[in-house]
Amino acid sequence: MSKPVYKRVLLKLSGEALMGNKQGGGIDPEILRIVSQEIRDIRGMGVEIAVVVGGGNIFRGVSGCMQGLDRTTGDYMGMLATVINALALQDMLESYNVYTRVQSAIAMHEVAEPFIRRRAVRHLEKGRVVIFAAGTGNPYFTTDTAAVLRAAEIGAEAILKATNVDGVYDSDPKKNKAAVKYAELPYIEVLRRGLKVMDSTAISLSMDNGLPIIVFNITTPGNIARVICGEKIGTLVRRES
Image: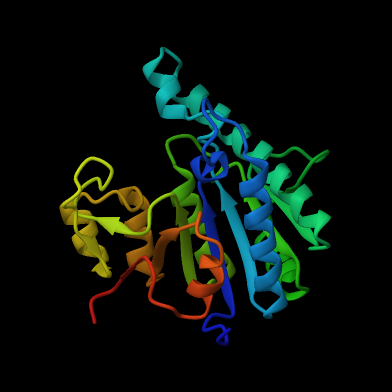
């Protein structure tokens, strides 16, 4: 295995990725094991890693709003779903002897630390994996935006967006077999074309802070390490060179 090209990264893990092939939501234990093993191996390479986990496998605020829930209420429910996923990931990681801390943007002292930037950075420096839960703690902001915000706050060098597809396409590859995958994209093109990499707030924040985003398929074993070591898989979103 090549040497890592990043010292500190933030992994954005969607709730849908944790669901795997399960129907109707929930967490696939096998996906959880694979992700945890890969994070363990990355820690063994000396890379500091933080994780922002979504909650779409349990509840999605926007869909709740469409079913009649108030948007703010739905978003808070979605934030609580991310805490469930964070605790599941923490438990699996610690079964592999990976020291882990969950920090929540919503206070719940019995199960997680409050988010404190300096404490998070110190955990990373001590070799612990930090899982950021409950998004930004505010409605109307997605966990994608939370991922970029936390990455900027902890000084991450890149955001690794783990999905169920192998990169960014010009159209949905599941519906269009002729869809073209991008190897690289500038932020402004993602915004201009409305490509579904992350929401526009997250992309704009990444652009303002010069944080590269690497979109790749989490279901292929070893992909996280490949990205960490600089292999050109997935799609890289960055400033124009």
